[in-house]
Length: 105
Image (cartoon, rainbow, N blue to C red; front, side, top):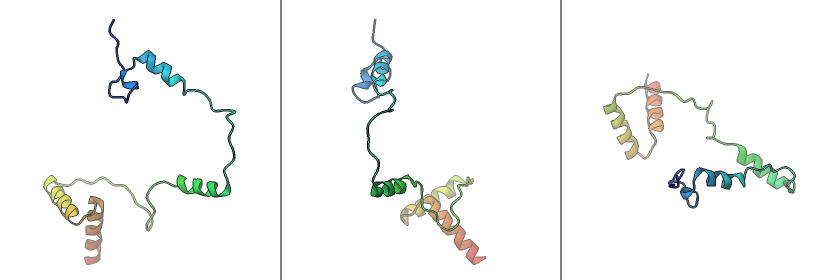
């Protein structure tokens, strides 16, 4: 009977394993970590840990809100081209344009 490999795209040696072999390999890591000796974090490490837990972009102003907009493909292409030339993101480009319109009006 031919071996049925689960996923040959996985990194070696896992890519050549059958489902049973892969389950056996994964089972080695499926144990509880209760009672594993360790030591408490120092005050410096606690500060580093708190800083590392803060994720995401920094808040500017009142924060940002993600929106979905509809735009003609040709206009979007021009926006992307301009933004690329000015080395800015699409969002920054649109934000800049909206700011200029509000200032003008």
